[in-house]
Amino acid sequence: MNMPKVKNPNHSKLRDINGFFTLKNRHISSQQAAGYCTHFFGTKVGIASCISFTRIILSPFIYYFLSTNNNLLLIYSIILGGLTDMMDGFIARKLNESSDFGAKIDSFADFVFYSSFITWFFKMYYTLYPSYFYSTILPISLTFLAYLTTFIRFKKFASFHLYSMKSTALLAYFTVVYSAVFGINFLLLNFCIIIWSIASLETFVASVRIKKFECNVKSVLLIK
Image 1: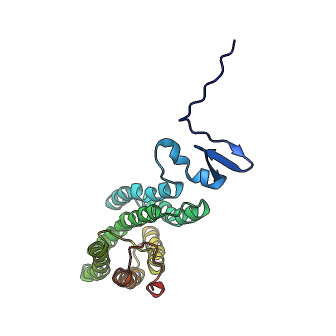
Image 2: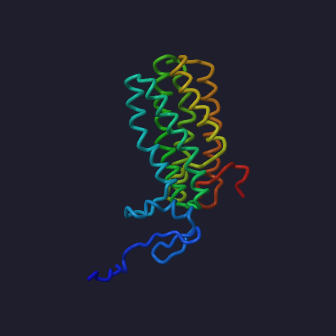
Image 3: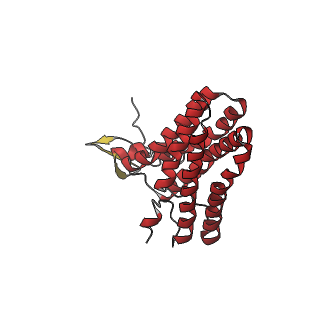
């Protein structure tokens, strides 16, 4: 005789019902269910945040490739990191995962990942153009002051999602890849430093002007 199956009341159910899923007696859309797939592994971290974590994981490898002059793997790592930077926000909006936690993870991942670029610029200037080495101090100092200001005001570190910083990131990607393939271009390197300085200045101004802690600041002109 077949014994009847006993349902476990604590067991999570996941089944498709006309495009919707039932998860622990909560009805959520198919897209939301996909975004919370990591819930089944004991965490509520969404797919977008997992993609952001990729940049954190890549950062030590970039430091290693920089130190060993492995240009090919350096380019691959930077391209992959750049793709994750573009994808995490898009996926968060697509799967309705946008949250304060996700924004903080994205900001921290940006800080860790872009620090590798700072190391690269230091190395290039110190090795090839020692007389211009101090030009990197301005953007780094402004960025540090922005982090310090948000910490003093809100007891949190913030990496704002400014359009100027996004543009700087794209230019930094291009500069590093171009330099790895064709060699160092002094004008391109200095242009990147100038744009970086302007974006860092806006970051500092934003840290002073915001009235409450917010990572998703797009421009100082949009701060009310």
